[in-house]
Image 1 (tube, rainbow, N blue to C red):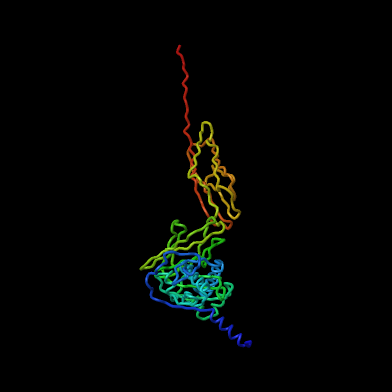
Image 2 (cartoon, helix red, strand yellow):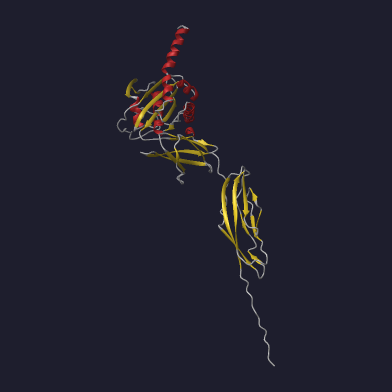
Length: 402
């Protein structure tokens, strides 16, 4: 029976071999050759060679958690979060699956032929199959770790892997996780890269959802100015460039794409990222209100037509955090009620004396404010009072002569 010290020595060797990291910057290679067909089912045929097949993850939530942990670590170290990149994810999932199904552990890709491992391609050639136009590549792999937290902790406690995670040369990342029949059970791959003339935009550290619409937008590159828009809406104004921007998304629940345009003296670029808003953050808005209202006063009958106009500041519902108000600038006009926070009807009523002779005008201002007084929306309605000209008939009596 081996001694306990011998067993500990073997265990140390196993732990050491379960973490490998490679970092490199290369001149971009030739355009990659893609497989003519791509399968989602691992098989000897789809695992052969330098990849090209696209496999599903054993646990996408685990991959997302690795992303979250890595990006939080980068932010804590003053670095921009990495952008999830589908091609790198495909490359990472392929290698994690390949290592498990072919039962090996290495950055170099192997095929198992007649029970023996035969080298099929280098790690960078494999990545080039999926990820073209790159100017930087690096990779971390691990095996045997059962959770995202444990594998990220293992990488961060290894100098080479930590260097890859904290490299400013890396702008994009893909994560692959596979559980299979290989010796170590759990296989993990992180593939990092940066592409020429590609400037990623990352919303909320690449989290897929937001509950409150508060967006932190990170932008790669060196620029003078930036501007943004949501879902092809109007562009916001240009503003001085900052690698981190804050934006409050006020909208109904749903998927939204944020597009960023960047420029400097020599070039410009656009990039985008998407976020799913899990609950509505939309502010109430004023109803469709008229531009003008008209009253007509007949002094001969002392009658005003119509006797009143009505408006509805909010179409439906309401929010206690918002209050609408209606104000007038002339004493001959009154509004009831003058404020509310629901879908109340407001009556606009003129008061004119029988001596009125001239037409008059007034402005009704309808506003919507937050509880702190911040103005959200405003509409001005022009009100005209038209006084009709009095019409008199003169009857001359008939007098007969004598």
